[in-house]
Image 1 (cartoon, rainbow, N blue to C red):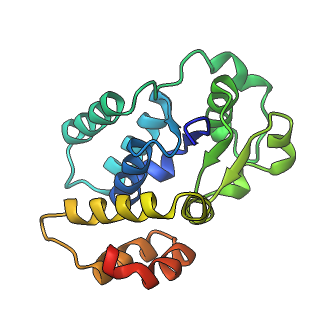
Image 2 (image 1 turned 45 degrees about the horizontal axis):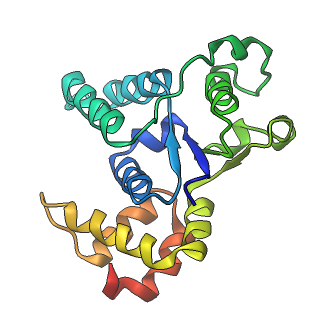
Length: 189
């Protein structure tokens, strides 16, 4: 499924549980994940504003790890497209510009209303909520997705999480339909 190109909006990278899960899903070669330095700047800036206990140096290290581990993830040469794009929030234009530049199929975002389908249709791009996207992945490659979710949960060491605790975290991340589906496989998570 690597031919599927998915650009992450900053809201996907802002939350550590979502960021970790979607990084691991990309590493499982379920799709090609993409982002820009502007997207990095946005999630880091917002996280620093809301979490003074986290240092910029730590987030920069996370950014570098992301850029290193996901092959060909950074989209460049997209800024010339921004001016021509009309979106409800002009601050989101850089995300669509990057999606157009990299020929992405999906913009993964918690804020799908910020990316109207009428605008995206011109570019053959869809905005998808992570809950919907995960349901699609689970229907396409259930074993690999469940294995990746298990690996993500098992990577949590401080403190470790039970399957039920991890599913509760995912539910807090606006993934209720995915969690509902995964409950039947919690022994594998």
